[in-house]
Length: 392
Ligand code: SF4
Image 1: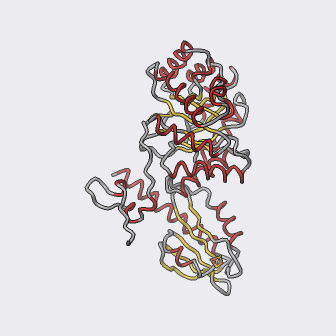
Image 2: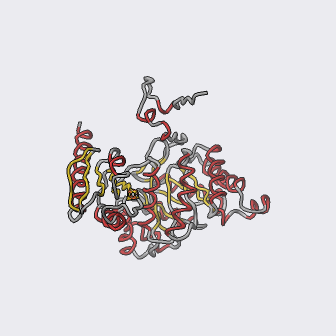
Image 3: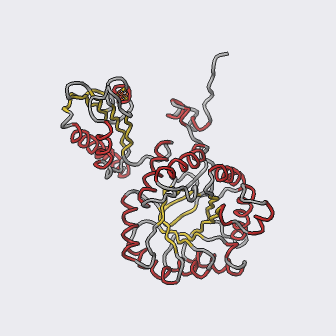
């Protein structure tokens, strides 16, 4: 029987006409419907773009160091930044930090409800606090009042490593049921106060546990979900674990904001987060380089070239696709689907492509400068078109 593909409803626009998704329906990700909340100026949930977060690792009361790190995170594209607020000095420092940065800040509170109130009063856009861990509903009421008065949202952050004792006794070990029960218990405490501007995370270092817990939670609530594989490890293994765990959830349409946890610089978490979303077509920020692994056929040093281009093009924010391919085996084919392309040739020359069309031979010595110039010009074109659309 011949294969027949029925496009999903998301591939049809309201008039029933086919959209780009129906041209390549295998790329469609239907996002789970969730309610939309605000973290400062950033929407999370609903149809909002999936927000990318990281967390500072400076002492929060060292205002200069913390502002410096948040500024570097803004430069690489962080939508939201979380800071720890373990003591009164840190909650007091928040006011000065908030005044010096643009990105909304989430105050990470553990156990002490007063830090939550102080952080809300001092400009935090969101409190990461688990209502069940702060000493009863009266205190929840106080924190919610402070959050409400300051336009603050809340993140309930359940972690497989710190589940409530009664749930561990009931279930024997951290498991999806226990994590979801914990999350819903905390959520109920906020719901009881009539407060619904919250998002939830159920992170664990084990990707099987994390993915199962998020699937279960996604069915049990319409709250926006913050994704993460916690304590994922160093740059390489942490990226792999996060890409498998969070990637599978995002592919299933689950997740409204993400944090890649790495034992590395926080900026790297943002870069990896965006690369993950770009790979799934869920966000488009910066240059997406498609490059081959290289082999004896390469007409130039592909690996070195890509390393240089990653650095020289890191300032570009517009979504530009670039193919850097060692030879004609795959180069012309990849160039057909990228904004700018370069394919290695022989005798020290390669071929440049713009929008899939050959634009001329380029000496390998000049190609990096030409590629950078081509990408920057294309980025300027995209920027101008966007501004024109906004003005109209
Ligand atoms: S594209 Fe060419 S150079 Fe690159 S890996 Fe394939 S055959 Fe080798």
